[in-house]
Amino acid sequence: MEPQGIQSRAELVALLVCPNRGLAQQFSATIPETKAFNLIADIKRYPTAQQLDQRLRQLRPDVVLLDLSADTETALSLIAAVAAFRPTIHVIGLDERNDANVIIRSLRAGATEFLCAPFDIESQTTVITRVLRLRETEDKTTPERGKVLAFVGAKAGMGTTTVAVNTAFALSQEGKRKVLLADLDLIGGTISFALRLNHSYSVLDALRHSEKLDTTLWTALVARREGVDVLLAPDRPELLNLEGHRVHEVIEYMRSFYQAVVIDLPSVYDRVSQATLGEADRIYIVCNPELPSLHMTRKAISTMEQMGFTRDQFSLLVNRMSRKQELGAQDMEKVFNFPISKLFPEDYGAAHRALTAGKPIAPSCELGRMLEQFGASIFGTGKDAKKKGMGALNLKALLSEG
Image 1 (cartoon, rainbow, N blue to C red):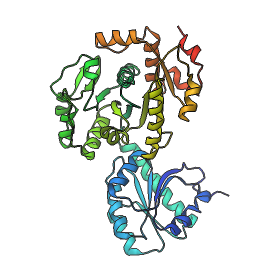
Image 2 (tube, rainbow, N blue to C red; image 1 turned 180 degrees about the horizontal axis):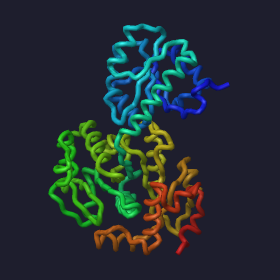
Image 3 (cartoon, helix red, strand yellow; image 1 turned 90 degrees about the horizontal axis):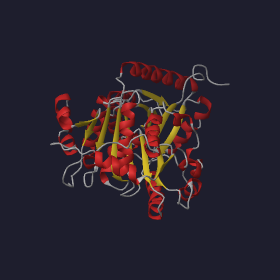
Image 4 (cartoon, rainbow, N blue to C red; image 1 turned 120 degrees about the vertical axis):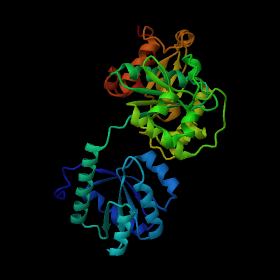
């Protein structure tokens, strides 16, 4: 029989940080009964504040279940770090005993609730109900945040910029959204070339003034092309002594200003990419069917998992598929041990015409239509949003359309 008051409620997605393994085991044993928490990760040691921040950005939990018993002072410092995180993530302190002093200190540090062993159902029901009510209130009062879509190459030269640019313009047309296209490749960014844009400012200026961003400054920083705001990479390659908090501040400002933010990144291994990927709502790895790319794509998928991303947080896009290609979609999926979300056909002529004009690829060709459909599908309004198992598409049929 399910506990009254919990059975009709949604699970809270939870991250458990619990060096006291006995306490962790005791708490975890109650989860099947309460069905209140969806435990997506179990961290067995106290992380640094920076490590925890990275995990929060990757996993996006509703709550952090934090052990107060193993090292109270360290736990309190981590509570303060989570309390400062945006958007809000609630902290529920866990302890072996009901110590009033520890409870008061944890609440002052920013914890929302507290649970004590043996974690009886009644106490959990009370705590969960209060957290859910707080979340409902926050959902009603918090302004809607824009979605951040990161496009990153398995290696250089995969056509990542082409896919990112066309996705941004498709999103702008679909539903008339306010869209930003941002080039965060500080060494080899090419969006300015692709769109024939010249501008006095770049993403470096945004990063250097991240704490001062406002409407006036932002309007000066971005260029504009056919209804899409564009934040360009610097004209000259620059090795920036990157501070992670600045990337976060800039992207949070982007979220507040736009409904959709499309970010063009260099390879998965680039430090700017690694600082940015954790901020994204969705990550798209772009590759092509050539053997070096297939090899690097397998490594990129492995690297993403090593960085702590789950497989449902990123998708794989295969660009420049040819009728002459020996490997089909299903063959490549076996190579990657990972599903393909979308295939884009090879059309150098259309890409060249778009570059010459400084515009997105026209939807009059098959590649342009598929890029437009892909952009529409991201927000669930296009035809592709209804299709499942994209990786299992018949390649010959796909390339012969139109």
